[in-house]
Length: 101
Image (cartoon, rainbow, N blue to C red):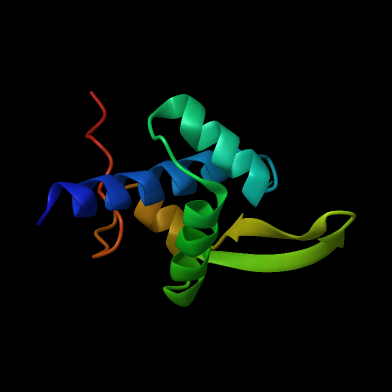
């Protein structure tokens, strides 16, 4: 596995963990972008959008697109499977979280 693959999988774990911490398990793509940037990764909005599409294809999130003044915005909501992966269930596209002491 390349270093880029490692970063990609870790970034997707960060997205799932951010969604897990929300009361309604949902965040907009712009907020996810800002939060991921603040936590660990230098990332652009189109990368987050691509991650959300991939996570949706793997049924880890549900993605809704809404119209806003500047165009469209994605809203991601964690699924049950996504919660399981965020909590440690292995998945080929997402890093596993570190064990809790």
